[in-house]
Every structure is written in C-alpha cells, then in structure tokens.
Length: 269
Ligand SMILES: Nc1ncnc2c1ncn2[C@@H]1O[C@H](COP(=O)(O)OP(=O)(O)OP(=O)(O)O)[C@@H](O)[C@H]1O
Image (cartoon, rainbow, N blue to C red):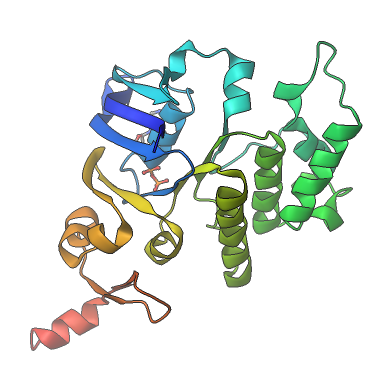
C-alpha cells in the first residue's frame, strides 16, 4: 500500500527547545492512524509538522511522496485538512459560514462560492449532525457542537488526509462513538487517510488500525493497537500502572488505569 504520510528522522522544536527527536514512521493511504502519548509529549507538534505548519529542524515529512515544504498553500489545503485542538474564534460567524470556509482552497479567482459548494457544506453538516445549528453563531455553541462544526469544515475541504487533534475530547459518549463512526465511514467510503491524536486509548484501540506511542518526542512503539498497547509499553509511555485486558466487543485491547489504592492493597499497605 502507498504511504500517505512519511515522516523520516523528523526533529522539530520551538526556539531552543527540541520537542520531536528523529521521529520516523509512516501512515498508509486510507489508514486510520492514532497518535497517543502523555501531555507535552509532542503530539500536536507532530500534527502541525505533518500539516506543514512547522518547519523541521531536520528530517522530512512527505505527503504521497512529496515534501510537505514544496506545496503551495492552496495546493496543500486541497490535500490535507488539519483540525487543531483549539480553534480561535475571532469573529462570530454562523455555523454554515464556518463550514463553507472549508471550500476556500477550491474556489476560483474571485473566491465566490457556487451552488455545488453550498451543497457540499450542507452534506458535511448533515454528516456531522450540525445541520440544525446552521444559522447559529459558533461562539454560542457547546464545546462538542463546535468540534463537530470544525470536522464539517474539514470535510467540506475534501482533503485526502485528515489530521485531527483530540477531536473527541469534549464529546459525550454517544457523540464520541458517532464521531468515530463518521471517521470510519469516511475512511472506508472515500479512502480518506486519518491521523488523529487521542488520549483515549480504548477508542484508539477500537478504531485505529495502527497507532504511535509517543513519549518526550520519541516513539516508544508503533503498530496495531493489539500489538503495541501492552502493559510494558503503556507503563513505559505513561509512567503509570495499567491493566490491559481483551475488550468484550472483540479482539482489541482494553486499557484500565489502576488507582493507587489498589496498588497499596496489593503491597499490603
Ligand atoms: N508554540 C509553542 N512555543 C513553545 N513551546 C511550545 C509551543 N507549543 C508547544 N510547546 C511545547 O512543546 C511541547 C510539546 O507540546 P505539544 O502541544 O506538542 O504536546 P502534546 O503531546 O500535544 O500535549 P497535550 O497532550 O497536553 O495536548 C510542550 O513542552 C509544550 O510546552
């Protein structure tokens, strides 16, 4: 299978601080890939580098074989959509306006949206279940509604690669599963490549075909969650004790962090 994202010896930092150290991995075309790791381990930095928003100190990021730095802005936006963890709301646009902004890399010289752009915006809003909010301004939405609006905007962009930074963090249980199901459908219907940052190892294990465990900007392991979400690798990554069992829904791992009182009880204290 062809690689959609190839990261080779990638070193990225801010000023004097190096955050990612010689990272190497790839994401296959049409794959659902999840990046996990502790706070501050460099997950968002990695997504930004893959989106071409940060220049590497050394190493390369290639998208379908081509260096991300060689793309023009519009050309890159037609290939990859990046939904950051926090999207600044500078102006109270309506939901429909925000979603339609996703069309901008596809618009002609005068930047005017046509009928088909409106249709694509409507489709994206239906898919992410925000159609009923279309006239509402985004500053008056809940965190979870806002996250679904920015997914709709990214879908409207019609990218081949979708980069999502903790998209389910503000979602309730039903919307989490619904959101992940939408992504899974997009992957299978449109062969969309998805790379998603998540703190939820159980969602990562249920939906991710492969995952990367990142610790202090270095890869601890990468591969199918069933192979790499082991007690040893998760303890090494997160520095806490977990129990890894088999999810009753199927053959993927289920991770349970162990509260300190259980460890004390075991130690007889
Ligand atoms: N714009 C910035 N300028 C300077 N340092 C930054 C900047 N953004 C992030 N950092 C630092 O880079 C490191 C990695 O941050 P990053 O946001 O990539 O981590 P993360 O794994 O996504 O964390 P979290 O799980 O908390 O969202 C942290 O030490 C952070 O303080």
